[in-house]
Image (cartoon, rainbow over all chains, first blue to last red; front, side):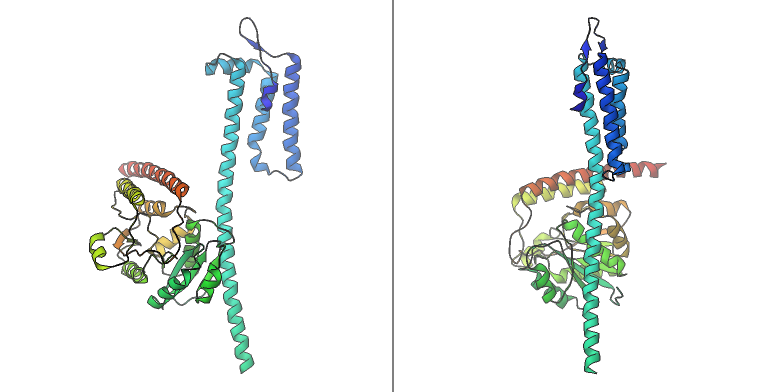
Length: 144
Length: 250
C-alpha cells in the first residue's frame, strides 16, 4: 500500500516522530498523487465527480507528512499500541470506503445500462413494426 | 405506439426456443384481443426467430440482463403504449393462458391492482382436478415456505406463492414497475413494494404444469443469491414498514 512508505519511528517515550526525509517523501507522494488525479481529469480519463475521495486521500497523506503528531493522536484514539499498525488500519479503511464508493457508482451505472438495453429493445421492436407496415403499404400501392 | 388494444401480454424469454412458439400460440388463442410481446433477454439460441415466426412482436435486449429487467421492459412497453392492463407469463409452458385470462379479469373487475397466480392456493383441489401438474422438489418447497412466511410476517399480508411469474396488473402497477423494478430476483421485492405503496395485491389459485422442455435455470449459486437477496429485501422492507408505522402514529 502506498501509505506504507511512511515509516514511523518509535522513540523511548513511545511518541512517534517521522524523520525529515520520510516527511518530505510523504508530502511529495501526496502532491504527485494529487497531480496525477488532476492530470487524469485534464485528459478526460477521469470524471470530476468521482475524484473527491481521491483528493481526500491525497490530503490525508499530506497531513500525516506535515503533522506526524496526528498519527500519534489517531493511534491513541484507536487504542492501538503500534503506530505502524494504526497506519495500516487507516489505509485499509480508506481503501474500503473508496471501494464502496465505486460499487455505488457501478450500481448506478448498472441501472442505467439496464434502462438503455430496454430502450434499445423497444426501439428495435418499434422499428421492425414500422418496417413491416411500410412494406405492406408499398405492396398495396404497387398492386393498385 | 398507437394501439387500440387495452391489454398487453408479455412473455420474458431466455433461451426458450423449444417452448416459446407453443406458449405464444396458446396465449394468442386464449386472448386474441390482447397485444402480445415476447421480451427476449439476450437469448443465444433461436428464441427471437421462433417467436417472430409464431407471430409475436419481439423486443430483444441486446444482452442478458436478468428476469426482472426483462419484465420491466414489458411494463415499460405497457406504460409507453398506454395500455390499461398488462399481464405476463413464463416462456417455458408452465403457466396456462386460461389462468392468465382469469387474473386479467380479476384486475379488470378492480378486485385488486396486482393479481398473482399462486400454485399453492387450494393446492389439493387442483391436484385432484389436473394431471401433469408441477410438483416442486423438497428444497424448493422448503425455501418457498420460509420466504412466504417471512414475507407474510413483514407485510402483514398472507402470501402462498412469492415467486410466481404469472401476474396481471393495472395502470397503477404499470406506473410503478416501469419506473422501479429490480433486475434480478425481483418477485418478492415487487410484492413487498406494491404493498408498501398501498396497492392491492391478491393471489388467485392457478395450475402450474411441468415445463414443456428443458430444465429450470435456477442452479445452486442462483438459489444462494436468491436467498441472500430475499432476506435483505425483507429486512429492508420491515424496517421501512416500521418507520412508516411510526410516521403514521405521529
